[in-house]
Length: 131
Image 1 (cartoon, rainbow, N blue to C red):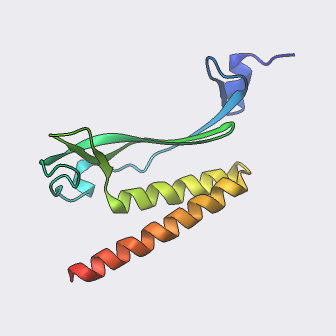
Image 2: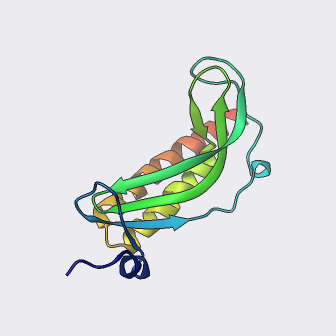
């Protein structure tokens, strides 16, 4: 028997139109505002000014989708570039890894853990060079 949409929602699942399987969608919120990120540097792609914007974040792996509520980031005024603040991006990776682990997606969790460790190392190196 195929479960109803209400039954799926009770389990934290939702039916995705056009998908052949039920999608496990998990959400989290970092509760950040524009005041939590520094003023932007010029765009690394084109050099135009960047502005603060709310950005989406989503990771998909098989039947699991992890989404963050919109988070503050940067959008370029001269090209389509969108960037997350490096500290916010690290928080996104860490939260996503924890949710993937909780969902039993251990391969994804380990991948995200490695991405977060690499990003953290690069962030620390960048900050130490600026001192």
